[in-house]
Image (cartoon, rainbow, N blue to C red; front, top):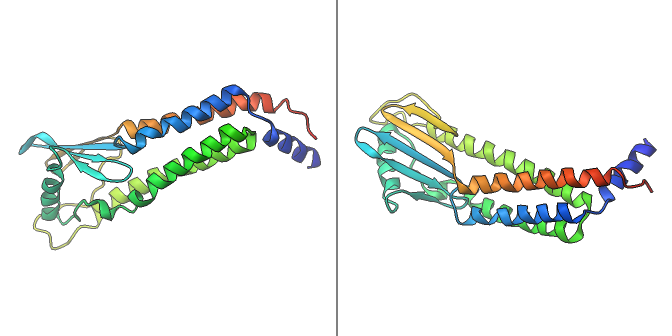
Length: 210
């Protein structure tokens, strides 16, 4: 056990070379588009909407297509089936997600400056947890919207869940949901962190135990 702890301490205390630091810096820069670009896009087609209704989901707001007019139109349709209106205030994620992403930018910058394996491990583990929790939160929110329907609604539909990725037929609507630039930026940051870890781990394994 003592030898294991020595090796673990030596691994975590190993300094980061230039390569891993550059990759962590790239991860920090990759977070910038999440403040300016949508994370997800949803498009709904129906015979009465041949051009589609579009919803853009940012890290801090909802934006409708057609200069914002698609959200009121979607909410009118939601009213008929008993679904709650889509409004930014209903999404608690919009209150904390930009703050958390900004905190990760600072955490990555700390890793670049202080430059030890332990800082990289902290950044990677916390970021993976953030990504997993964000996906779960997004999926759960969509499930709640599609299952908590007003029983007194004018049009009765079976509970449903909009697609998190790809295509799904919902009543007479064809719904398409795909990640947008903001999500790809988050994925790029994760890739940079993983690559930085593997680059650093090769050198850290060679660090002598103290």
